[in-house]
Image 1: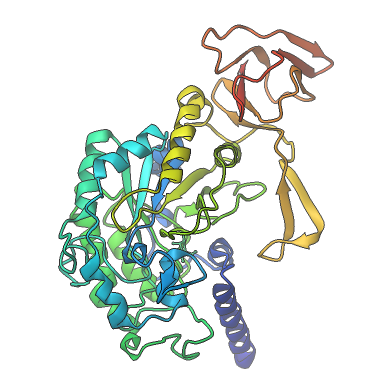
Image 2: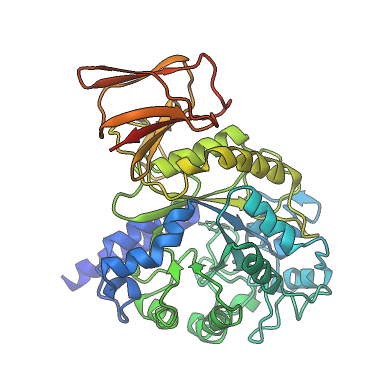
Length: 481
Ligand code: FHN
């Protein structure tokens, strides 16, 4: 029995390590598999549904947020010693096994004078985004804020000397934007004892590639993570409204509980499912994919890049089209989730032009059609949004899901929104109606001219103009009661 459970544990740890190594770790699965008898109960374990609804309200209404990955990795921008390094830009230190002292030396070159908090917040705003989550310390271990705890930070170690978080917080306050902080609690490649994901040329025991990384994880937790989280939670006024943890790996329930004690002191805070140590947090966080059915009964947020990297990579120009990004937003909203879309500013603090361009275009669509996205609920239609392959598997070994892009639907209290991608003109047919429909119009038609309805035995046909009002998605509104 004892031996068996040990074996199970070993197999499980191995599976987790493998999943991390292959980059296909399913945080939600880990969180859901484990019992909720935490050493320290989190707010989520004790609050009532009404309290939870009140806490989550702004987040549920928001639907669209900006992720910002910005750190020292924007200097090498994907190349080291003249060679292109595979993997996302922010992983360059790990992928290229860069020694700690060499990596830390990047700080003395970091002078992003092009950074302008006003412009970034204004960009998020004009794109229709309602909140920002910014990396305050990514796996590289560099604090992008004024930290008294560790001198490896943007104020103490760079010629820039400014605290971008303070500037972002001030602008978010001014422009009415919510601000949350990403913090890599487990991985830290420059602090002794910080965890690192294993790669081929790392020491298989420690996962390290430099002796300077060796040390005690618990010392790192107590001398860097917890004090820095305390700084982040107390130095920026009403912000952060959310904390975004990442790659929980070696966060045991006891370690996570120490962080939860701190989080519990901020009862309105929202935090995700990646703290680790059995804590489920508030939100599921599918990364780079949209689940076929969302996460019924759970709040969730799909985080995605516009190209193939989170942190800036000078040569990654493989940007998704605005059409794809807008479809993603609509698809996610139709499944009751939020879209956290990433930008990766360069080492001067500038946001790459293709990202700005796409965000502006999304904002233009939302300006007209935002009513169909913000503060809506998931679809009421039981219509598949794609097909599962009987032969191909996805990264998690599940049947591969391929979305179809005909239409999606989102729900308001007395309206059903139908976002039509494939416009056939003439008419739109619905077999079954989840609510009684009293009228219809197109959201982009400012006169809201009523559309002709024809009912036949429970089905409904809505007469549509020959051409769509938007080349990507035209929203049909059904008034319902
Ligand atoms: O390793 C990180 C990665 O760099 C990025 O921050 C993403 C964002 O969700 N999270 C991790 C991988 O899951």
